[in-house]
View 1 (tube, rainbow, N blue to C red):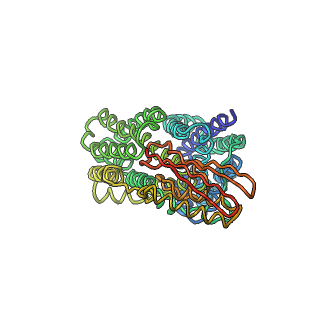
View 2: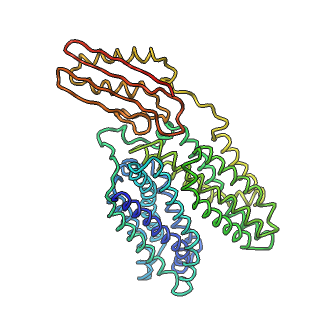
View 3: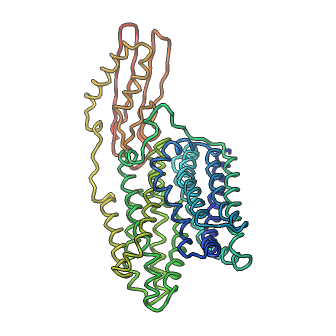
Length: 504
């Protein structure tokens, strides 16, 4: 019951905080323009927010491994609240300058770089004990709530600005994030914290991507999609101006994309756990790429353009849900937190770079060719990173014969005799080294939640017997491996090991 309450609190936090951020995104440029009188200052906060994110692999490595409780994440949101209050407080005393805008962006950017990946990682950790597919479903529902705010926030913000001006929305955003922090304080579930005296327990982002090939491929597709996203937003806006319909094309495209993505997000919790993860994500990016390539050809009809955008939007929640499923099922603990951080860094960083360079690219090439090229880039990335053109190598232990593994376990058993009471750790190493690791797990622990489950019993110091059973991983993505049992019996001056195997 407590775990389900924690899940509800975290999902509510997502909705409240994102609703505040979406509404403030409408109001902040208006406040900046009114207070500074400079048009370039309207994007200063957004640009400053991206800097801490791009630098997060260096300054956030140790901090993200401490975000294992709701209380820790609430402290991160409290830091965001401080950043969000800089501009409205400055506006209240009529002293908003570019320094205030930059400071607000940097402070909130630091919080954003930690809070998003941290919340997804903690939500996955809480769901782990409630079922093998619950984490995938809850992450999909979290994405659904995020997408609801994309539909609800703009009209709410427009009505609020028309009624009382933009400044109250900035106060409302700070209040909404404060409510989210209070909700996170009620979360009692925790994750395993990385040990500060074990450097290998705080993996670098690149190490996690190097160890998990499927996650690396999925993150690559996400990065390419983020890099060319400007072609949709800026491209349709410029294409509408070029065809004498300013604002109409981008409005139709964004409306269709929003409706399609909301429908996809509603079905994602049911479909994503049943579909192959990497193939689902690759298919989603291919569909979006085809939609990008088709948009310049359907600009004559706003309805048709909206329908094409809706098809592309429908595929995205399924792809994002598949990526979250890969991370939540293939990693745990410190690696999971690093994997979510890597995904956020690659995608959001690529979006920022694309938006910075997108205007110049469209100015040189043109809006239509840019959309076609962006779509082709997504298709090529999905084909190369998807499961269809790659040959997966079988793990080395999988190619060993049962006789080879038996000899190895017997040798370790003999060495265990000389180590006295350390025999249990030695046999645990047999379990780790001889078992198949289809997820690329490199944990040195005796228990791997994804690949094997070890159980042992301990008797007196003079006589002991342990049985370590490696059970097949529940994940359908596993390649065939051995199900094996190793039994070690130790008496003074002797040791005996026996191993039995069945193939699956």
